[in-house]
Image (cartoon, rainbow, N blue to C red; front, side, top):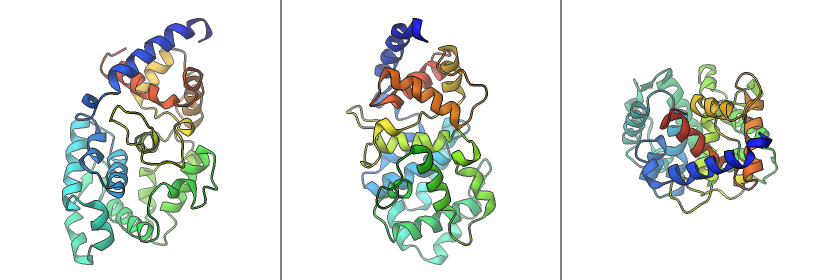
Length: 258
């Protein structure tokens, strides 16, 4: 990477400028939380949009819109105030292998969590910000979600954890939405305990392919350590906001077939 450092940085900076723009929003799952202004609605809708973000983007967005409609387009209020009979509307909901069992459990978890806490950020950092390493934060979140006694084993595959060596693409994307701060209008920047410098780059197949071509990934396979390797290289370009380059890598991969 050293010999091409300036050229790679110039390419990536240019593409961040190009793709980190409001016109990125409509065709991306991030459009779902952009329908809301209340912090908790953004958190909840963003969580489901990220968890369901696999497959064709159009299908992802349509299923997320359907899910928000089922929550009366007020997810936080619905989660806290629904009656038992209101849950029957979710029976039959499906997105790929994510089904109503998974959905009903996560609604149950959110009700438990939001009845005690104001923001989902502390589900990652701990209430007293005692969990500092990003790897540990994702593991903590996973374990907290599945800490209730009726947690279905099958739902665990939908929430990744570094403890299973996963690259945690979808959760890292969710954290980018919630934590990154700029004036470009795509990411929300509504969380303040975690900092943009803490984030790990979401690694989907497009990002991975471009990163390997640019020499930003040398490790074989795609796991948590690979995502960390990529992020370390991106920190050389911008130590305070390495994950902004997710836009460049994703855009180069999916839009430009780099």
